[in-house]
Every structure is written in C-alpha cells, then in structure tokens.
Image (cartoon, rainbow, N blue to C red; front, top):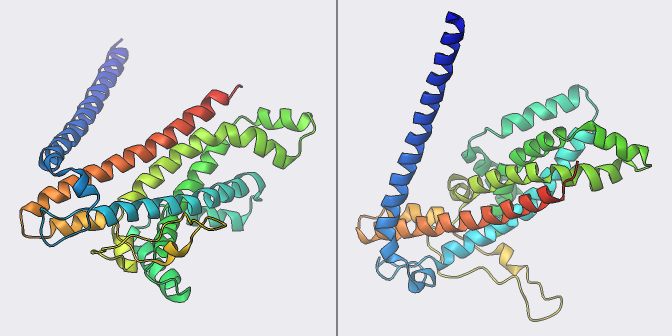
Length: 298
C-alpha cells in the first residue's frame, strides 16, 4: 500500500515538474515574441520589404536578404531532400549489416551533432576553393545541404524502420519486387515521418549564420540574384546560382551590431519576416505530411 502511494506521488511529482518546465519554456518564448513584435511591427511596410539595405535606418530594407533566403532554402531542399531519402533507403533497405555500414551509421549520427561552423569550413574548402564555385548561391545552398543531410538520413531510416514488416511481406506475396514494395508501399507510409525530420532540418538551416559567413556571404547586397525564369526557351535561367547573396540572419546580425537605435527596430522587423518565412515553409511541409497520412490504410 505504501509502495503504491509512493508511486502515485512520484508520478504526480514528475507531472508537475514537466508541466512547470513546459509552461516556463512557453512563457519565455511568449515574452520574446511579444518583445520582437512590439519593437518591429511598426517598421514593417511594403517599402521595408522592397528596399535594399541602407546606411540610414529609416530607408533600409530587406529585399536582397529575404530573396537570398528564399533562393538558399529552395536550393538546399532540392539538394538535401532527395539525397537524404535515397541514402536512408539504401542504408535501411539495401545495406548489408557489416562493419562498413556500421561505421557509416556511426559517422552519420556523429555528423548530425557537429557544430555548424565546421560545415562552413568544409564548404569553404570544398565548394568555394576546390570546386571554384566562389561565394555564390549554389555554394551556400550546398553547404547548408551538407549541414542538414545527416538529420534527413536519420529521420528517413527511423521512419522506414517504423513500418511493420508485414506490409513488405504482403507486397512480396503478391509478386512485387523489392523496389516496387519500397516505392509503392513502404515509402508512402513512411513519408509523414520523413517530412517531420525534414521540417526540423530546414528550420535549423534557415536560421544558420556561421556557415554562410564562413564561406563569404555578404552583409550588404544591393542587387538580387538573376531570376530562375527566362523568357526564352527552355525558360530556365541558372545564372543566378553563381551570384553573390546575403540572407536574413546575416542582415539581422549586421543591424544588431550597429549603434543607431533605428537599426534595432529594423532587426526586430527582420526577425518577424524570418519567422513568417519559417512558418510558411513548415506549413507546406505539415500539409504534405497530413496529405500522406490520409492515404495510409493499414
């Protein structure tokens, strides 16, 4: 009887501690968001979104910064998402369980926790100098793709591992090949978990500053990368991949370091724009995740 009472008291204590920790975190987050909205909401305007940076805080805008962020995140997703899924499928479904694959798995797990500045140094040596891509959009996107690739691989493997093996056996019993089973049965069922990991990875990438500063991203850019859409056939223009760029976290950091008080309001407004882009990006991924979940019928 005493042991049962002790267990109930322990359960209630852990519940109370967990609730207090959760409310504390949410409270701090709410305070920070309120402070940012209070400081930056008055600065938000169409002029702020469509103007280039300036030495005068009242004339400064974030056009080049948010356009660069959109470019970088789109390319990062295009590079990292298919590579991460293919690597996860190979390791989980095709890779043999031996010392070599074990070594690869350990390295991938370790790379997921490596500080981002290390990826910046890797991008500087590999993409900027060795491959001679320069301080360009494609070099920045490739560096961030390397940063989030281990997270996508790990989430893909965990999602594939969570699918009951009976689904694979039923598909094989109907005459499907291994790839047909993965393509039409396992992968669609695992896609919600894969997208959850991708959301976390992209949310990390959009706020990273250190890797992009390391490869030489600019703090002041008064132009936009070339548009990917062309008026001539094949209607695609890849010249923008070699252009210089800046992103919102770098622009915000630059404004915060300025002594003028007006730049603090600009930085707060930039944070609001960055949060909005992050929420929109995550909303699309969450919508895709729910769409796949509705198709699953076990």
